[in-house]
Image 1 (tube, rainbow, N blue to C red):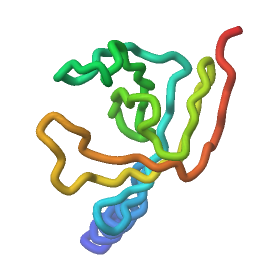
Image 2 (spheres, rainbow, N blue to C red):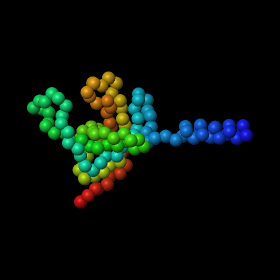
Image 3 (cartoon, helix red, strand yellow):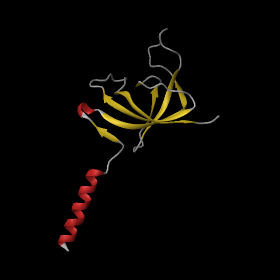
Image 4 (cartoon, rainbow, N blue to C red):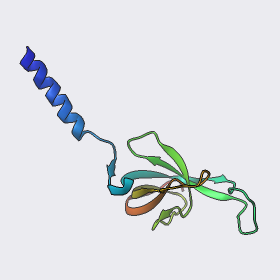
Length: 124
């Protein structure tokens, strides 16, 4: 009985090492993540202060990190190497790099495209 319990515990411990999410941790806090980008954009206002250089409306992509419930908006152009085309839903592999000392109201990470896994036309 004790041996059976030990084997079950060992199997559970080993399997937990191999079960993971859709990200792969790298050095310096970087991680490869799989991100879904919705086919529609959201509109938002720019961060203050308002200047003539600041647009009055900013368009945000709706992003969801695969394997988590993490959903957030990314301004167009925030994924280096990725060109969003309206009406398409994307599944992307990106490298997320945390910013060492982000501003209190600024971005906490940068994103760089590794691969477009899929691109699907949605709607008309």
